[in-house]
Length: 306
Image (cartoon, rainbow, N blue to C red; front, side, top):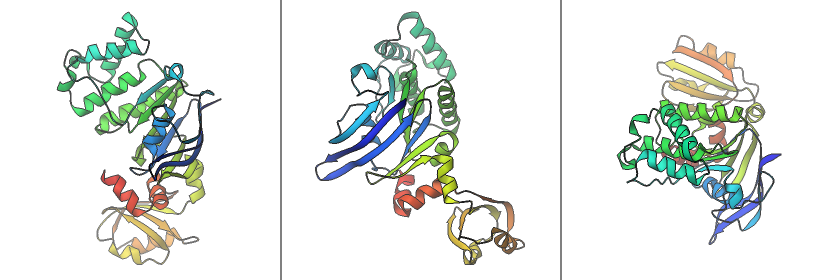
C-alpha cells in the first residue's frame, strides 16, 4: 500500500496557482523529497495533505483513506512556520504535547528524557523555551513531531536553523526511522541532503511538477557526462575547451557538463600543467546541477539566497 497518493490536485489563491494539477505517490517505508524553489508550491501541497487547507480539485489519500482527525494521529507534521509556547519550560511543553498525541504518564516522561539526551538538551529541560536558541527550538519541534512514533512523518524544511552537526543528526534519525518502516516526506531546497537520503523525489517549479522518480534513475537518465574538478590555480581557460556544454564554477571547484560524445580524457590532458588538479572525476550530474537545469539559473539562485 502507498503511504500517500496525490492525484491531480490544484489550489488557487485568486488568479494565482499555488499548485497546479499535481500527481505523485509515495510508497510505505521510504524517504521522499519534495523539492523546488521558494514559492514553488511545496508548503501548500503539504498543508493540503494535512487538511489544513483544501484543494480546489483533485484527491489526496493517506494510507489508503481520506484525511480526517483520526488519521492525523498516525502522522507527525513539522510545519515550516514553527510555534512553541515561549514561557513554558522545555520538559513541560514536551509532556503537554506528547499527551495530546496520546503518549502519557511515565511512558511519555521516559521518551522525553531519551530524546532530550539524544539531542544533548537534557540540561535545558527546566529552561523556558524562550531561553533556547533557534536551533535548539528546532530540535524540540522535531521531538514533538516524532515522539508518538507516527507511521508517516512530514517535515517542511527540517534543516532550517541547524548547524552541520545537528543537520547530520536529524538525517541519521530519519534514516533510522525509515529502517523501522516509517514513511518520511520532507520538503527542502538543500540538494546535498536529498542526495544522501532520498529514495524518490518530486521537483516542483511554479506550481507544477517538472520531474519525478527514483533518484538513481533520474541521475542515470542524465548520463555520465559530468566532470567534478577540484583544483588550484587560474581555471578561466577551461571554458574554452570545445567539448564543454556548461560550467558551474565555485572558485576552486567546478562541475562541468560535457557535450554528448565529448572526451573527458581530452579535457584532463588540457588541464595538466596549467593548473594543479586535486580531483578529476567523471560521473553522473549532482542533483544540484539537475535542479538548476530544470528550474533555470534565476529560480535556483533565488532559492539558494533564501
